[in-house]
View 1 (cartoon, rainbow, N blue to C red):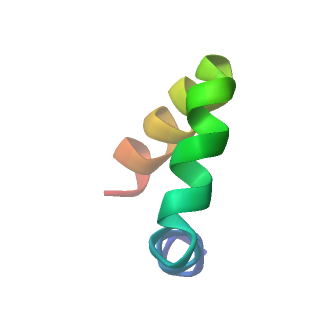
View 2: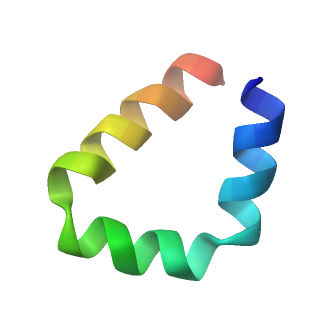
Length: 38
């Protein structure tokens, strides 16, 4: 599961960063989730 999400995240990195910058709560949630995955 995590591998797919990480691949998706890397593919849409620029979009994800733009989105996360506008939604700091989402950024925190994603960051926490990725740390759990890694």
